[in-house]
Length: 242
Image 1 (cartoon, one colour):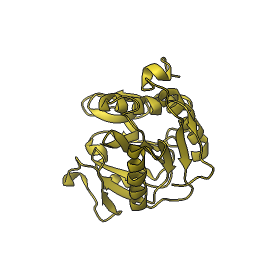
Image 2 (cartoon, one colour; image 1 turned 90 degrees about the horizontal axis):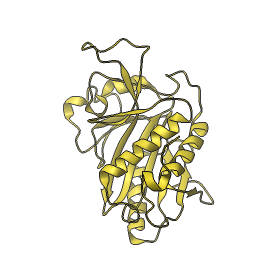
Image 3 (cartoon, rainbow, N blue to C red; image 1 turned 180 degrees about the horizontal axis):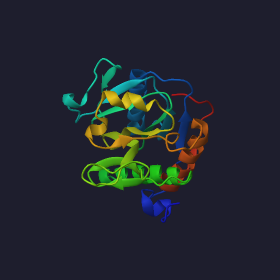
Image 4 (cartoon, rainbow, N blue to C red; image 1 turned 180 degrees about the vertical axis):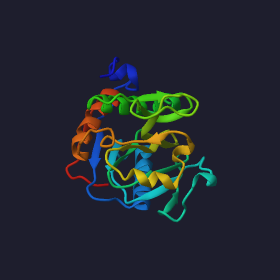
C-alpha cells in the first residue's frame, strides 16, 4: 500500500467530486475511443461533465505518440498503425491489455504535469502491489517496470527488467486524456513489430507472463481501489459504456 494518504500523494487540495468509473466490454475501436475521449474532455473543461476513468480493450494495433521515430516501427505491415496526440513513442494495444483513459481536470487538482505522471505511476505500482508484484520506476524511462531475476543480465551486466505498464497522456487546457496501459495477458509477440516506447535492450511482460493467472475483471478491482488511494473516490454510472 502507499505510505501517504491520497491527499498528500496527489491532488485534492479542495473537495473533489467522485470520478466516474466506466468499464466497456468487448473490443473498442481505437478511433472511436479517441473521439469519445476528446468529446468528454471538452465537456469537462466546460463544466458540463464529471471527470472520468474509462477502461477498455482494443483490437490489435500500434499507436505512434508525438515523439515516435519511424525507425522504431520494425514491421509496419503487421498491424494497423494509428498516429495519436498522446506523448511518447510507439506502443502496442490489443486483447488482454487493460487500457485506461484518464480524463481529469488538473485545474481542480494540481497544475503540475510531472506530479500527475508520478501519480499515474504510483497508481499502477499500488495496483500491482495488491497482487504481490513489485512495480518500479526508472529515471528517463516513463512507465512501470519489474525486475526479472529469472532472466540473464544485459550484456553490460545490468540486471534484466521488463516493462509491464506504459503511460502516455495529453493535456488540453489542463484536462487530461489518453492514459495508461497495463499488460494482463496480451499477445506479447506483437511487441516484436516495434521498439516499445523507443527503449531498446529491455523486454515487455504481463501478469500472466510473470506467473500470475488473473482475469481482467479481477485486476480491474485492484485498479479501482488503487485509484481511490491516489486520486480520491470514484462512482459508477447507471450503465457502462462511453
